[in-house]
Image 1 (cartoon, helix red, strand yellow):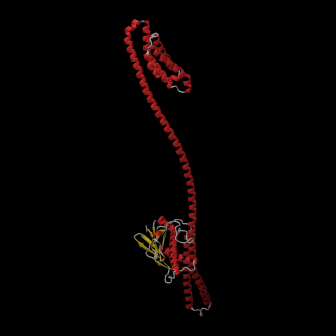
Image 2 (tube, helix red, strand yellow):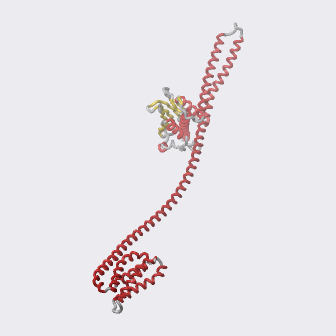
Image 3 (spheres, rainbow, N blue to C red):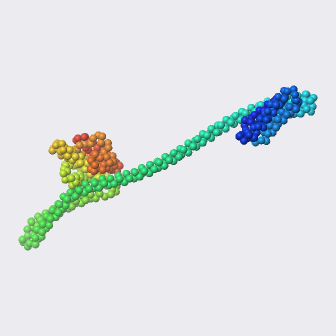
Length: 458
């Protein structure tokens, strides 16, 4: 009797704590409290001398039965089903014992021990099932908490992922904008560089044209002079031929014919000289075709040295300098792009003349330039590396800190407007990238600068 009421109180208390919401508590809370009060009353009555023990036991069993029935029928009590299943065996044993005791007290006495044993094991079953249920529930609750934690972490991860994706998208957008801006700037820079390179080529062409104009004037003067003299000699020969056979001077006729022939040879020579100069100009000015041709480097060096000198003279009437050629007559023809190699030589020689002239001007400002003569020497030779071309001047030289920068694009030591800073950069690319050679510089500050080109014979 005591156990049945304790079971009732336990189940009712369990249900009271686990009502799902406020609405369920308002609906069932009062009923559950009444049930617990009845269980307490039945316990008190069971130990009281007043009242029938059998009736009180029956009422206690009835209370437990009503509670279990409610557990199975009321949706809000569904969580207590496991406990209901646990106490059903004990409730059944108690109910059977009560019925047998009422119907046949003598038979009950004979099997009372057996019924008590069954009741004990039913009670143990209830306790064990409740314990296992509680343990399982704790495990499920722990798993639920872990699942909630994982869900929380997952949501946090998803949130962070979404934030990162948003940041990455924004960063990508910014990088695309920067890339577009850099591409635009690079395109503008390339266009500017192309314009500067064109300006450098045109400036080089202008200096070359001035030199050619001066160079071509000499053979043209010879052609004109010898043509005039030849015309005079032809007139004399015609007058001599008009004379009577007996009056003609055969020896004079032969001399006139010889003079005319010599004049024609000189006209032909200087005409071809003028033609060669014009061809050099056309080679230098036309678009590079990148085709290598067997080239006489000595002839190329001589032509561009003279053209550079006369070009600078035409540009600046006060310019004056000496130049020398030290050529190895045993050089083989070399496969190069003539117009590109011409640009390199013209750039190096122009720079050499400029450096030597600047030193002259500086010395004159200091009152020490009377005995100094600007000089440029162009040398060709063969060495173990191949064909060597040297352009040397007696200018102020190049400081060590500048030597590492002179082949960089747009770097120049000349004052603003005197150069674009592309001449040496273009020359370096033509020699190293275009012809697989070397372009180096050797200098001693205050004394000289020497640019050295090495080209492989292969």
